[in-house]
Image (cartoon, rainbow, N blue to C red; front, side, top):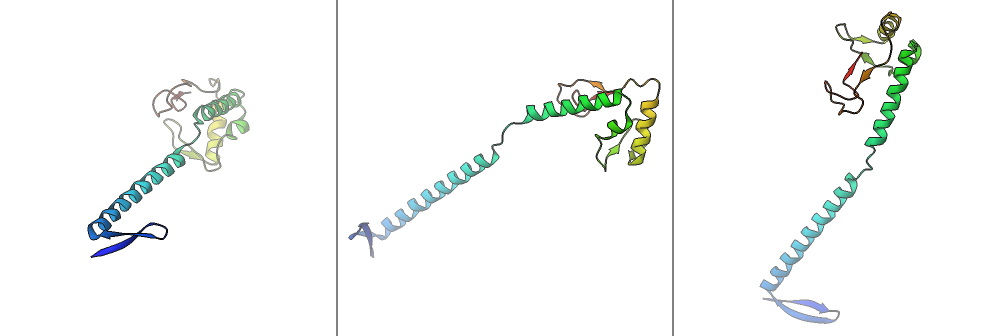
Length: 139
């Protein structure tokens, strides 16, 4: 059993069944390798993002400094302007506050005689909860 295959346009060569199977597998492997390389390239390009961590960190530090300045000035409205409408405040040793209760909490906090305003903490750490960083703060 032989099959004709076109070698060049208009020229045919005779191939045996084993040659056809061999060429089929070579072509299948080539297609598989090509598809794998294409997929890998696609994932590599899609996953590349500009590293904006330094920019984001500086923006957060600037917002933190602005918020601390508002709290130090004992300005309730400016202090609350950094909260989202659906924010929830979890003060230490007190019940969770939301909505108007957050305003009441900050009014009493800013009116207390010992409050000096702002937050102090390590600004350059990892930011992990309970560790140094933007979330590891002390009032």
